[in-house]
Length: 239
Image (cartoon, one colour):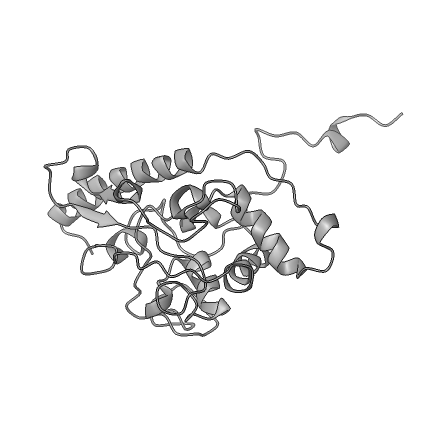
């Protein structure tokens, strides 16, 4: 349970993390990319679907290459100082403390500097639950309570502004496809990225704490239609 000071700190950090997530959205603002399965009929369909999801979610906006997989540096992670993110009050005031600098990691399957040493399940768990793959075993997770259902007792979360919590409505198949693309659809590139900074609890006080906006695991959307939507099939009288 948070005390008053930690509550205030968490609230302030929540604002900054939310602000950083907006920056991610701005970097990742790319036009919708249509899947071109016809010209690659022999390719692994799961890998192709993962490529489609990666392109349409702007992963290259932070991890390199923008919206074009032909660009140099495609998903190789931080290659310039201006690609890192200041997290904390320093995001608004460069002299403010505390200040953590987080660095978009190399997503290519290089074993030493990328994600090649992780299994597809570890990558899936990172996308679904926000868990750092290097600190999470290769196991099927069946719950979100620490210490139960293979969820780590002391979870280490991905550093912000990685927007994994925004993917809670995505189907498991989409996330497995992303894992397949990163592991099997990319060429390994050596690019050692500086380890992201963070608090000693690896962001557990934010993502696993009392802030309701940051809940863990899949989330079914509200049934359609809500009060703000309309089901035309039911609204249109039959002739």
